[in-house]
Image (cartoon, rainbow, N blue to C red):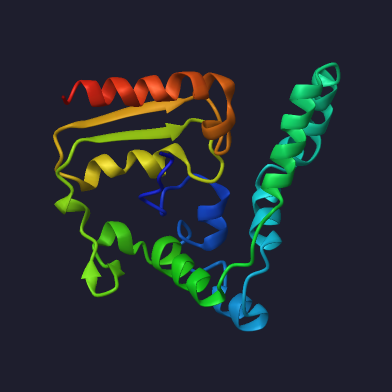
Length: 191
């Protein structure tokens, strides 16, 4: 679900800011990690907010007026806000490696990524795959997820999208209703 595969797609500000689509490193992750050590948990969150400043910083509070009559919906809004801003610090060296390996060097699709001593080779994935992505995702662009099809040999590959954003894929009422059915139907076809 909403899995980034190709971090060099010409879509999404995270890809651009990290330098993956520019041909040079716009983000100097070494300076950031060497200066901060661990990455403060709120730093990535504020970066995510800057990707859609009006929608995530203003519009969602304007939209709050639409649910002023429903205590249940207000509580859900407050719980989501608490969850979104409850970010633990990130280990600096892990963060550095993630940015470099995925965003700047594209090691996953180059076949150069290692977990421990084991090389990750997408061409070894031969199991059935259901690739689920969010059409309005500003963190994982659709093109990044859909790229998986180019790198795997599996002939049993299905794609399903939902017209929501990155978090909406998990909290939208419509998705919560339809996603389990989508997954269930996919599994039934393979029994």
